[in-house]
Image (cartoon, rainbow, N blue to C red; front, side, top):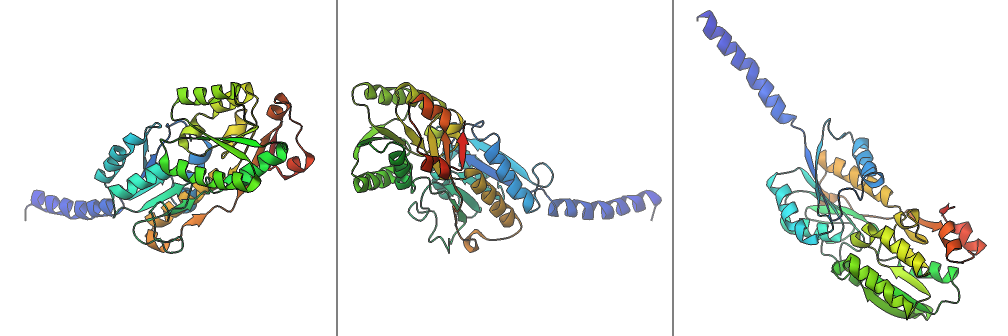
Length: 327
């Protein structure tokens, strides 16, 4: 054998196992599908998700890639975004919100999906049961809708003379709106509160809903959970202060920007759990074998400065149970 031929054969023998090894160790890709704008979870929540991945041995940019797809508060964009992730053959899809999870479920029955939803995933048709999900989906239920009774209770404690409650819902998020309406209606009836439902799906709708308070001001305001209202939290906080209406939201980001108070799941902790589940799936676990996790950490956040601006004296008992008081 000539020397040149021998080198060519040897080079091929070396290159083949290297190519095979590179193929075997190809970096897994996770698709991250969310309804909100890209900057809405820019820090706390996505950082918690990445930390969960890290705890299972995956670090973004080192041994796992994440393809982010943001619907920018336009649910109609979700099917195309989900289809793109499926075409790219990602190793797993993380679906944040009920609309994103339902769309992802329709897009694929083979790619593992880890969801984070604010209501019962069985009712949404995502899994067969919480303990035995079945299929290609599992995830976390953050109980955003199911805590309506507790939120009304906190409002009633803050304003014990309240008899009229307004509920602000977004019909463009039908599953979330229906769950919130069902639970707040039942809770208001139990407490003997008169309920008035207001719908808002746009910025102008929110302005119009609050404008009605000039003539028919409620004693307290219940703001529905959901991506759109969370994204409009600054507008909601400013309007609630302008119209002097004590309001409660599902997420702590509302009092953090000047809203009165919130009660709900520790969302960052749930994003962390989604990251852990995603990492376990990348290591070979099957979604069907991973039970749906449910919130165990809840937080009540109160903005005392906003309470003073509304002329409300917060009862000591309410202050004592707050997980955080913003001065």
